[in-house]
Length: 311
Image (cartoon, rainbow, N blue to C red; front, side, top):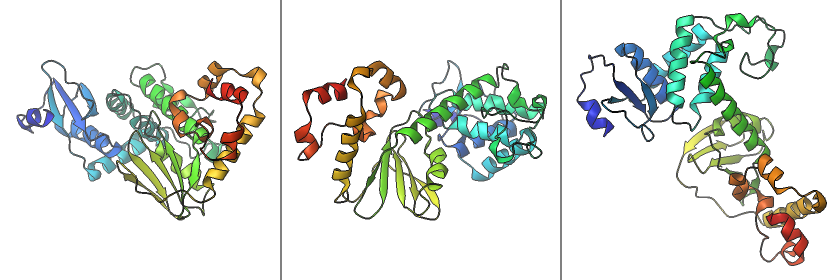
């Protein structure tokens, strides 16, 4: 429907009641921001094509992803607003919130108009400081940065999205479980509430720098692949992978036995566990699976352990 509507619109005609749709990538979102400036329009909504709900009387423009335009917007944000502002834009764009595109667009408009970059080049904290909005105190005056305008209606929603995406990244770092495959690759499946795989790869490659691995996001159909030197992203609906390594089931059973052994049944609190370990993640967490058939763990599990495990 959006393509039919956008086909009726003259490219030179600025519109007041208009929404922009894009392909859902960061490059697509930045291309939409570029088009808004180029067309001298102020779209009411900027959203992924699959989640956009046009308002009554609103015209939809579908914005094709243009990497060159996206890079120009990226450089403009960094130059005018600072590195911290662009990092916030990048994090917010990974959110599954259907309003994320509009929030990012409104923030970019406001930040570019204010022209108050946050310069971290002379910060005493050095690499440990990511600027305002990172949750770490910065040694430089905060009044220069638009990221410090936390009560502004263009900044507060962005900060909220950044916090939500950062929290989801932290959950994935905690609860990712890797399994060993026959070809020597390690595979971790996850189902996050935001597309955080691009934020995970640097963290894991820094720790598994010689070990090839794959992190597959089952919700967003995105795989992060590391082959021992560089990592890249692959968008796919399914993975064609070899079988598990011979010792993988034994290692999973040993890990589950350890998990149950260290549990204190008298202090079992299922509500607290669900608070710290969201139930939506359980299907990809080894210790939350049922017993593996044919293993010693399956034969030796008692009724008390089953009550502790199933909650």
